[in-house]
Image (cartoon, rainbow, N blue to C red):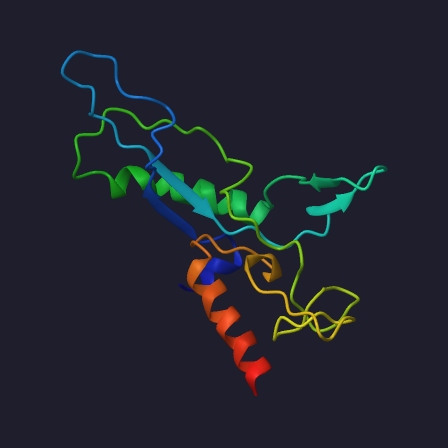
Length: 164
């Protein structure tokens, strides 16, 4: 980490284990592919939200990745060839920014008050004080790392507050 984080998002590079783009068709090269995913943090944007439509159905309003996230992706793609230099890489395909990384986060934001959030730092609903919400929906923003350990830690903290 460093001052560069003021200019662009952090990026996480990992192996894509879903193989959604298939194998290579050339004889003898079936497995000579390495699907990678680059994930960046997206900044909070009030326009990215879940709202109810006219029939009270949930509607996801997503305006796209923030400039901060887009710049982080560009920086990661710029540095990727150097990272892969020791390998016999023929070509790098950029499939663009995916609209989701399958982590349902941020729909019940954590914060200091009901004006900008749903739950407090202990995951207790601001208005319904006997309602505790645990899970990744309480995240005020989304990092590029998987949210599981943070969700577990916040859930344990909420349980500790209830037990106290």
